[in-house]
Length: 613
Image (cartoon, rainbow, N blue to C red; front, side):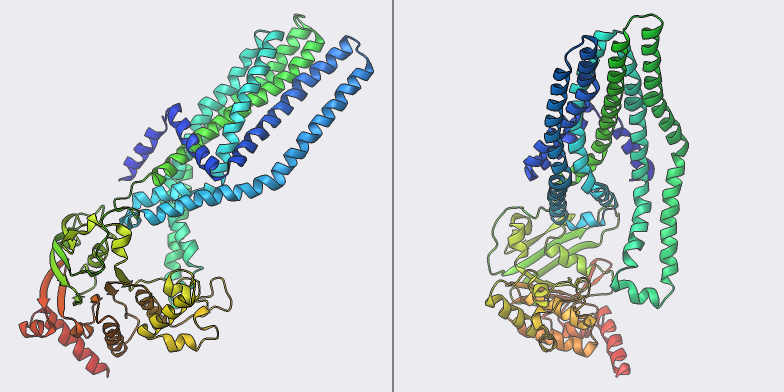
């Protein structure tokens, strides 16, 4: 979507109906109620106390005292009234302090955690292609923005609006009984906040949306300059100047967006303040004084009560208008949150279906085609392949040929644009997703090591019993890193990386890669997929690792990707990809005899290894 189209889309959202605003805010209320209903009740009770206190002191209390003086009630009755007031409001103050200092901070974290869990669950549920879609990623960024404060803001505003409306009605009726025309001044803060305030909120929202892409650049640089993985490259090259330039581009972009809305924002903000504060305060005081002093239409005691009530009404209405404006603004952000949380994945992690057989006799790829979202040129075209049980398959080719994308389609991390993949004769879309993926043991080139123990990194969960410990050790033996791990002080309980633990261990790239490979061996699988699992190793160490992997998987189907062809000799069949198309297939001997691109690539690599030795 082009930038102009994004802005057009956002501006269409400016005219959200009140029904949409209600739905969006009620959506958050439901989340809060489900997470901790006592917090919702407490918020509404707290708002009731606040507005009751306000109305009582500015209207009821003042009216009683002035009336008591005017009608010469006994001093004892006034003292009794004041003492009763002190007792009641002392109890309410105790509750308010408990709510503010103890209950709210705890329940804030409960609510934030619940909402973040929902965001995390959805982030792990959406298909892999979403992470490569800029529009979707921007929606996710806006969804998580201010998540921690947005849910509290909704609770505060919805509860405050309810009791502000009740209070405003009460004060308005009271003022009307004193003077019919004075209530007309209430229109000013309504205009200031509902008209100009809404425009202001839309300006802020548009500004935030247009700033997302620029802020992502700034956030990216801010994040990676502190990460260990980037530290060496930053210090041994001039890339920091490029990163700094990227940050400055993002910063300049944000400033340009702010300047774009500067004049309009200042104008609207000024008009909002004039209508919200100046007209009502000065107007009401002038009108009331004129009525009490010049026209004598109200008494001085009524003027005192009315002046107090008008100040109360003014702030209630100002607060109400601001709360409604904030609620409208919240709705704009909640819209992105709902869009993200309500997104229906094309490949649902919870998709039910057939339970695959424990033994897979064949996997067939038929006329497979795949194109990444938003791109025109397909990554894979007309792929046809049949893999038999216990067969060892090598997928080779230069970088960018489509090898990794192919195995991701096999594991149903993506779905093809056309064609199909069948396991035991059935389309893999018919299978239960989790059960189907459990057939695979995988090790990828772009693996990630987590700041956890070696055992947790291998099992990808916490070990629960002695069987898990034995499983970890066997997996480490098969991947060839067992001796190194056992030489460490805490063996498999050693924490990897120093992200959170100063005693953590940083291994070599090859050792980290072998731990990632051990993950595949630690699970019960039918098909092993190794995607450049030895890229950090030299050719000889790589060949030995492949021999070890083939021995460990002799009763399993194995699919491995490599741009080094020395390991392809171990395969029963080799597929060579180029520009997303299978250009050659056969055994190593057959491909060498055909003297095609595979043979040429193999010979060049072999010559290179000989020269190096």
